[in-house]
Amino acid sequence: MNAPRPRAALAAVPAYVAGRPPTPVEGLESYKLSSNENPFPPVPEVLEAVQAAAQTMNRYPDMGSTALYAALADHLGVRTEELAVATGSVALLYHLVQAFCDPGDEVVYAWRSFEAYPIATAVCGATAVQVPLTADGRHDLDAMAAQVGERTKVVLLCTPNNPTGPALRHGEVEAFLARVPSDVVVVLDEAYGEFVRGEDRLDALALLRQHGNVAVMRTFAKAYGLAGLRVGYLVGSDVVAGAVRACALPFGVSGVAQAAAAEALRHQAAMEGRVAALVAERDRVHAGLLEQGWSSPEPQGNFVWLPLGADTARFAGAAEAQGLVVRPYGEDGVRITIGEVPANDRFLRVAAEFEPKA
Ligand SMILES: *Cc1c(COP(=O)(O)O)cnc(C)c1O
Image (cartoon, protein in one colour):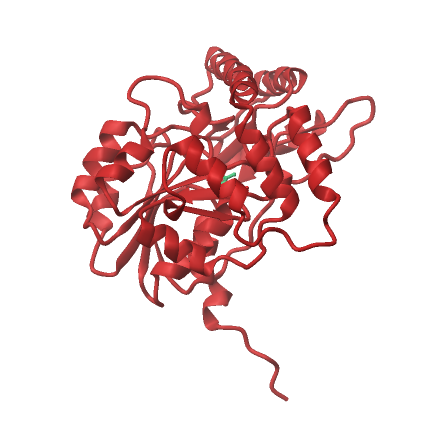
């Protein structure tokens, strides 16, 4: 008997490895430092908006997410036609690849980078072109530009790069865009954009005004602390944003998520204060690692990276024995989310006591 057969492309889809919840260790409070979540609870006004919106969960949400589109347009100074809202920026990514790639079309991205990239590419039947990062965990934009060819429809730039941490600077992205044909969509995935510090910070919306092929992806999951509600947005030309909206699921973003996101936009100062505290912790942890003699690329998100090679799994085990769940990546390294202060202190102690063999 013949069983139903999924499309052949699905056989090539790598499984998404989610950050695990902590395994309890006796006498120790456990911390989850494996999913780049925000350790701060939601601001009270957002919680109130969520409670109010939950009263009407017997109804479908506003299909057009009207209030959220209006709030975003106002906040960003763009027209609603230039926006697409979906159930997280991972969903936006799927919709974008689906909207622009026929089977065999190519998606160029750096590797290692966000693990949703190979999955979204494969699910949509497109072909991944992975360009290795430089030794210090940065995008190699020259090599990426050289890989853009006839079949390239989409380039994904992850800034700051998850999981290694460095951010792209405005000038280098500008120079990159000058080398990429104007019919290739260049996605700037700014999931951690609010955490970037330093000179020549990326102004993605300014680049979008100059280049109609730029698409900016942002999320409420990280800086705004709404990971559990699943909501993100894309800013692009009318054509790009419209194509992404056309692929989105009707009623995808729940009423609760719409209300929370619109309310969160009204509390920028609260968000920025929390981000500043996490950035200070990130820089303290990174300085501590360098002092201990580790090499670790410049962190610009809410996480740090240790390139542990063959020691990767052993380090994750050592952290777990101390009640910390971190995120190991094969034999590349470990990503550690910046969390509560006691969790960060404990991570620094684990790192200090670890004896590398590789
Ligand atoms: C966390 C993350 C996202 C956000 O995903 P959501 O679906 O909005 O939760 C997007 N891109 C990168 C690189 C991320 O790390």
